[in-house]
Image (cartoon, rainbow, N blue to C red; front, side):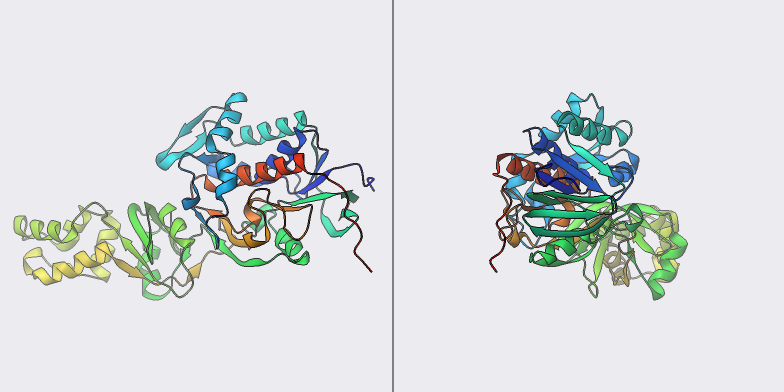
Length: 407
């Protein structure tokens, strides 16, 4: 076993948040050990953004995150901004570009971001040990972490093992389990940024449309997202659907506006006047992908010529095109979810330091916390910001082992 004084802090998880925390603390002379059960650091970073890593978003702000306490993220996000991470990327000569909606991607591979983080860790003297499965964590005179490679101890422990999303990448509920063991409250976790599934007539319509994509507005309650959506063999996916999935709850309906830039009724009435002999599906194919237009005409509308459709018939068609109400059967679950909603209740943590209020020396960062961003680089920015906040706190803290409990 490593001696109790060998490390100032142990970080569980060599992902985005954990590595950033280790860097921030290590730069100030803290002796940091990072443990991860995966064989490779930054596993989820490597697959993000189609392998190019959507590493931040220029529009990052607290309003782009879901949490029981939407104000919690303000402090960390204000103190470590997208510009701060862009500056780090620039110092390492990593080329990047902006896509739509402020999303920043590497020009090359996500491997460049992982290499950058590992180089920063090396410069800060961080000790990273992968392939270490955690078998136990206890707290007495500091924190003791048992692994299948031995035990380690330190006065501070950082939970940065993420959530339940993408178990094939090694995701587990370890951070949630440990937080609960130490008395921290949990907001019930659920899959976020996940494709939605359908059943019955809706699925029968969607399955033949698998691969068809279009821009749409997806809404649930008062929340709306306008981006691309995609039909799949199990239902709906694409950015608009992934976004709204973070708001949707089982049993609720979503609505789709398939013509977000058009007054659908005005367009249909004008086409009826100009081309009375054209079939509705022909007109719809001028407004929507052809396969979708044909499927809707056959399953929901009619193939009759426009001249035979009354204005109120066209009003009904327009109403569906602008507000197609659908009741999802469920989601693709954690296997396809990009993030985990919920997690460690922010009421248990300091928004300044990410330290547990009732457990000195215990920090929780990144996806393990009940802060979940929109699609498009926001969750990485939360990882960087929360990791940085905890690392800064570790660099200032008096890391003395706690006294034994009375009795």
